[in-house]
Image (cartoon, rainbow, N blue to C red; front, side):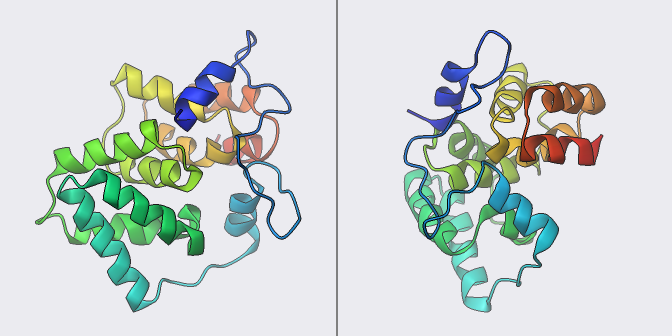
Length: 196
């Protein structure tokens, strides 16, 4: 089951996730359990991150070009491995730059389909974030089904910031982000209030 499906099925009548909601298989990091969204929040607000090495940039480009050939399953496997060393939050700029630098080799429709596939179908947290990060390069407003999925996944603090990055481009951004802030309590609320 994809992460989006799992979150959708877990929403309670109040429009929120249960307080103790966790994704299956969330691993402890060196024996310490971080709250959802905490690692990304720490990376964003408390740590600088090093730019990717030339070898990592080359690997990232290979994954993007693989996705551009509609080799979605192979590209996703590659991103699962790549994100073991590089959290999605730390490579958003490089990821988007790589796509824009290779736009003459990439079909935008294929890249949109790949991003949607990663976001909506993946059961890997970092791959979902990669999908959301690629969707930032596209106009997502007006696609009601996609907007609903973005608002839904935002309810889990681990994905709120990535959803906010998309929602902030919508004409209804202030309202949508405020509604999200009312339905999250941890790092998600911090990210929402930062953009309100």
